[in-house]
Length: 325
Ligand SMILES: Nc1ncnc2c1ncn2[C@@H]1O[C@H](COP(=O)(O)OP(=O)(O)OP(=O)(O)O)[C@@H](O)[C@H]1O
Image (cartoon, rainbow, N blue to C red; front, side, top):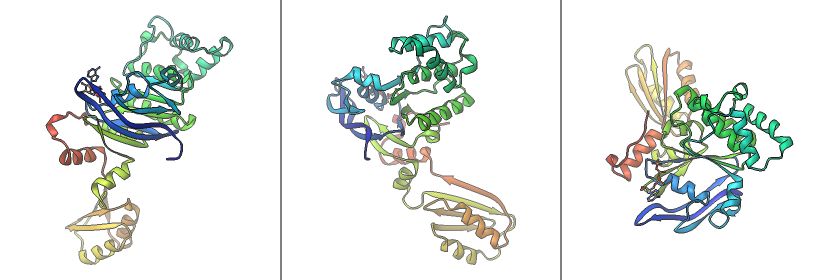
C-alpha cells in the first residue's frame, strides 16, 4: 500500500495479564472502508482506543494520518471522528441546534455554522427532520445525527463502533448505504467494528478477523475466501426442467470453460465449483445446448463460511458467540 492513512506496527496491549491486543500490524488506505470483525472480547475496541490515543499501547505504535496517536492524541482526534456505540445529545434541543453546538465547540466560525450544520444534516438524510428535538429521534436517526456530529468537523477518518446496534433491519440497510456513499463521496476512510457478519460483508472493502487479540486474517472477501477455500471459491448449481440426456458430453463442455474446477451431475441438477464467478458463461452454455434452465443458485463463500473455516482450523467453536443472522 503506497500511502496508508493508518499504520499499526506491532501494536500490543496488556490489561494486567490479559493480552487484549497481540502484536497487531495493519495498514489502511485513504478512502477505504475497513471492518474490524470479531467476537466479544476479541480486542476491537482496545485497538480503536489505541488508534485514538485513548489507550496506551504496551508495545508497538499506532500512526494515524502520519501522527503518532500515543504521543499526540489531541492532534489525532482532530483528524479522526469516533462514533461510539451510542452517542449522547441534548434531548431538549433540536437536532440542528445540537449540531450547531458541537460545531461551535469545535471552533467552526459563527458565520459558517448555520450553513455547515444544515448541509451536514442534508448529507446524512436528516434534512427534513432537523428541527425535531433530538429526544424524539429514533435510534437510527440518532446514529445519523452521530455521523453528522463527526462530519461537521471534516474528519479524514471515521471510526464507528458497532454503529448499527439497535437499529431495525431497513434502517440498518439505509445507514450502511449512507456510510458507503459518504466514504466514496468524501474519500473518507471508515473503520467499522462489528460482529455482524452480513453487514460487514455489504459495505467493507476489506475486513480483518480478530480472535483473542490476534488478527487472524485480513483482505477483501475474495482474497479471504480464496485463501481459505483455495481454487474452489465459487459454487454454482444449475437446475434444468428435464433430467439431462447427454450428461457426460455436457460435463466435458463445462470443464472446458475457463474457471470451472469441478462438475457434478445428478439427474436434472448440475453442481459446479469455480475459481471465479463465471455464472453467465455457464448459463449460456446450457442455453446453447437447448436445455431449459429453471434455476440458478450461486453460492459465494461469505463471511459465515470464512468464520466457520477459522473455527474449524484455529479455535474452539464453543468459546465464541457470533451474531449470525
Ligand atoms: N479497561 C479494561 N480493563 C481490563 N480488561 C479490559 C479492559 N478493556 C478490555 N479488557 C479486556 O481486553 C479484552 C479485549 O476487549 P475489547 O473490549 O477490546 O474487545 P472487543 O473486541 O471490542 O469486544 P466487544 O465486541 O465485546 O466490544 C477482553 O478480554 C476484555 O475483557
